[in-house]
Image 1 (spheres, helix red, strand yellow):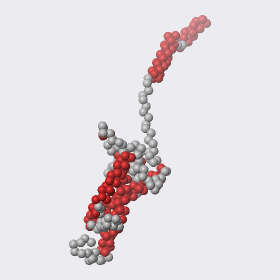
Image 2 (cartoon, rainbow, N blue to C red):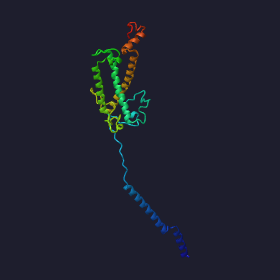
Image 3 (cartoon, rainbow, N blue to C red):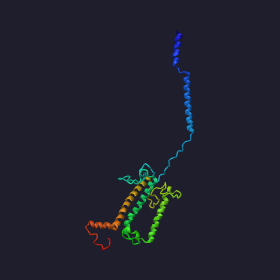
Image 4 (cartoon, rainbow, N blue to C red):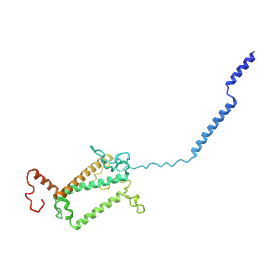
Length: 265
């Protein structure tokens, strides 16, 4: 009786024990999986790595590093209350860095010329100079003697050629489309190295502030010069002569009473 009970218990326990075939199958599965993982890892290690091209490091130019995420690539010039003002989209998203730098170069240089011209209108009309030139500034260029006019033209051409050699990439006549209108990567728009008074700041923040002041005054000068030029084209009077003319009108004085017939005064 006892032997029958023991035999029954042993048989029941054997029903829940893993069979030898199952153990061997699980061992085989584990072995296959480990081999595959090892083989894949070995293949990945042996595969050549793709060439990783490092991003170009842009050296700061006068403290400015072009940033595509900023308006106008981060160039200074924005000022309250308008801030970044670009209604015509000259610096909109998608414009290349070279185009932005070239537009800024044109704006800065024309602003400098306009500031000189604004002062020159008043100075030229107040002082006759060595060639006895007089009258509205619009009419003074044609009064210059031919040698003086030729010297002025050659001086402007030399200055422009010098600026081109400093800021622009040398033309490639074999494939001119690559270098046409292209500025040097290390060239800051308008910085041609001419600073006889040593006013250029060495600090990046101070340089950005001075650039903002210069470009804002240049923009104002371009508007001012355009207004003075247009005014002289309309009434053929000097700037101060126009001010005197309207002062007489507002004072109730006839501005033409001292004029001679046939003479614009």
